[in-house]
Length: 115
Image 1 (tube, helix red, strand yellow):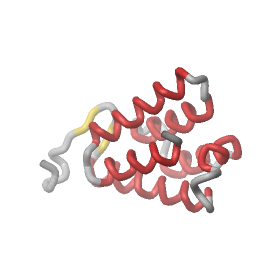
Image 2: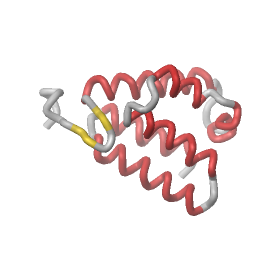
Image 3: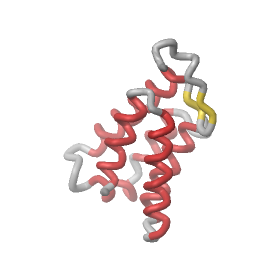
Image 4: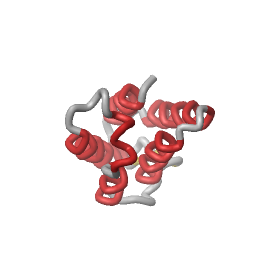
């Protein structure tokens, strides 16, 4: 899987409230890229995890992901990298707020519609 496919699967899972699957997607991707020595990919995923752990706020995450070193990761799949990153950060911020996500702890009782 390329980075765009991983992020799409992650984004859909987290938007649907399937937090466990979302974390599994990130963990599997990180492990895959660590084995292959893809440091930029690992750093990209680490920034998302840091946001989920509340170590970065939305603006800091956006600034990190907009760095030039990450643009190559999505070059073939995304026509406007800046807009894609802004939408990704928006969806992450929405999901964290909606489902009260704080990695590695998740309490599904905050959102009453989550079973």
